[in-house]
Length: 308
Image 1: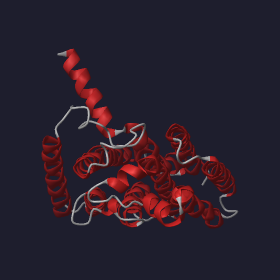
Image 2 (image 1 turned 90 degrees about the vertical axis):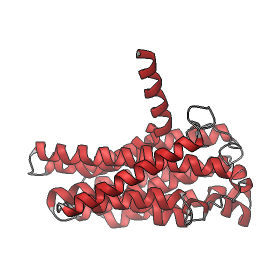
Image 3 (image 1 turned 30 degrees about the horizontal axis):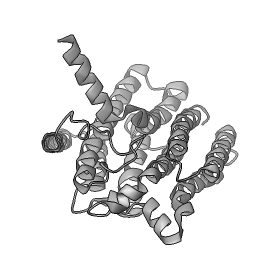
Image 4 (image 1 turned 135 degrees about the horizontal axis):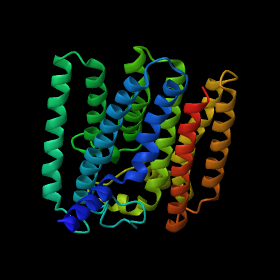
């Protein structure tokens, strides 16, 4: 019995890819809620309830539903089977025989139905903000992986219409629910964390570019588009683009958030410098840089939450 429970936990951990979830969704929530805990006047009990609500929703939709749908779609197209599979190539739950593609798809459909019903009930009982945040999360997971949209298979569209809105919504959700309005610092933190998430995913796609190109249908990611159009060395261009956009947010922070701006420009310079040094055909190096970027994403999000 104990071994079965441990095996179930291990399999769930594999599917969730929790380190990536922690550095993006969880960090974004912390970045938004930390100022309210440190500098706000709302009771810690109420803030904790909001934090746990967002944490559950973010981890459930990002860590479970999004990865279920993405694993299933990428298995059908063939890209995961041909991935170098160091950090990329899906969770490997299908490839390692932990769960069949058919059962994973059944679970995905069940979760989509459950979340949809939850959105309806929340709307009926007047919890419109929570319902909207859940709807954005559901849209993100569905539109990114499932046909007919399948936006992850189209350059730049998946980042802007699926990933960015989901992370941004998580970033403004806490202050919006707690305060009834969205302060400028929350918009800033949400945008910066979303840009970082987009940039990291672009690095994540670099080792998969050949597998994505050979997939059926072709997984025409921004990385594949850049490499095909301008040459292999430009596979890092989409990540550089998003880190550049993140760096430009320093102008938005200005002197009002001086220390946050200093931290952001420092992280941006380091990240961009790493990309210029990166050898895109060295999968081991790219994966090591991914790990460093995950750590930097967490440092960035927490720093933004402290220095408002």
